[in-house]
Length: 455
Image (cartoon, rainbow, N blue to C red; front, side, top):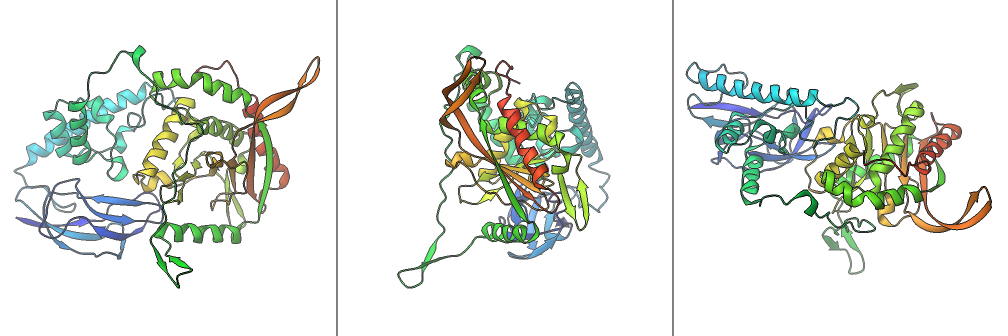
């Protein structure tokens, strides 16, 4: 038997430490590779930490509430002789053949994924699902996962499509076993013509906040303790208002053409791509185009220096069932077409509400949008997410009487209108730049091509 130490794995770029929320396994429990053993919190997201080795959990080295540096030991595990060794322990000669086989399997999967990725257009990286588009070099499959895949007859392409809940989207034992059960229970798919789109509620209903447990002060006043996320939001909002002098500009936009196009393509879009297209990806597409036109909006401030970002990483505010907000990020958003944006929006929204986001999903945003129209709001004054310098809010789309200009003269008609609110940091964004930017977003939306295809 060998006693090894499990270490706190990387939680994403710029994350140097995390706080232990609770242990999911106790000393004496049998654990397998990729089993979740404890839950931790960073300043970005809560997540579960998987075991890097199988064996018997002998001792906790940290306890609930401890702040632990990345790479520090967190537990000791007793492994069987010849089993998977610790990171700094050389492998014994006996299992060399097994290790070599596992490495060959990993290399085989990586080669296949690289071949798949090479067929994608660099400007169209998400015509397939997000899991399929994961670069081969960034996804690791443990020998246990590969063994289960071989036993169940799961191909390399099929394995690449399984969404991973482990660190850095790693496929865990639980993920692949759940997929196997789902595949066994799933009936044969019907013909494409019989596929029925999922119902689309109008308008989209945001989750209703659930009140925290209250303690009565005197029968007339209840005390509700802020949870950790609410405390963090409060601190960041106060800090943002302290750092950035906020200015907000408003534009009213005619969304009639875009709304009619979306209504017309909802059913064929869902049938062809298996995704429900909301207004959010359409709005994001216009923002991304405007960010290309106005790169000085895609910046951050460092003292007296302005850092102009080459990557367009757009965050989108998502309301959680608790009532809190979280902002997952679409990295390199300008590399996606409308299908890709739709998939990313739906995936990030779903994982945000299921508490399955990773730290990387929340990192390195350069601009943020909030679709407050989902709450029935017509406009707002959003607060900038530091260290960004601007944020945009889209209000509800409402039918209104409007003047329509025609060659024969002006007419009164019914149009679908929406207010756009743009808050910006007046230290580096003047009214001219901030106003031109929001007007450019509006121009792109009003100039929406009614004859465009699904992409």
